[in-house]
Image 1 (cartoon, rainbow, N blue to C red):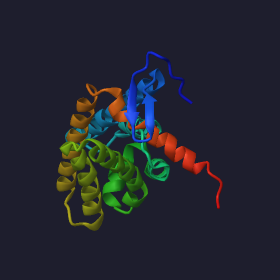
Image 2: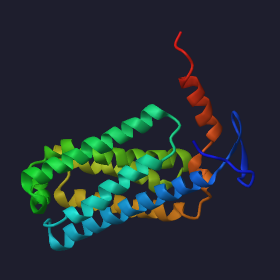
Image 3: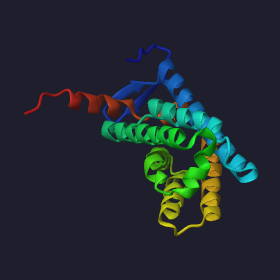
Image 4: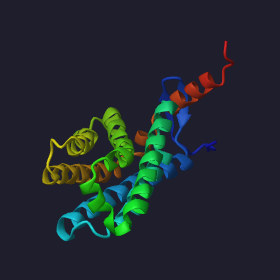
Length: 215
């Protein structure tokens, strides 16, 4: 539970006043840094894949997976079931990457993914979680780059899975999505922490409703 001090700024929420504490600000900074780390890792992975081929992409997967996982740890979402669903998708997709690495070897993951599209079903939940973050950002801030992240990821992966998109078209869409994610992250750093925290009175109200005894 966050501890508030008299120096913390006070905001008027839907269900009453609330304070943005130092712990809130640390969580917001952690969320932004984690998402930025994931964005950089994704962009570097795609750039290396395009320039030097699919071997040894796994070092970029580690910060990508960790960055999204930590971002989902610190993200503020009013609906707890949705938050937990995104975390579950991240976990399933991350385990899919582990299974792919075990099956094909770390250096052969990209080739195995290109040769056998069904692997997308296993790693796809990870990207669904990332798209969910994009949707949350668009829903809260109406940033056009956020809706780009939300739409381009499923279009690219489903297009590749169905065979409707070529490998080069899929790479292009993913590259555009990675660039938009970087823009999204960079635009978040100047924002006040309160923007990412949201209305804490709503969180408090929803928590009180969860604690009510069932009829």
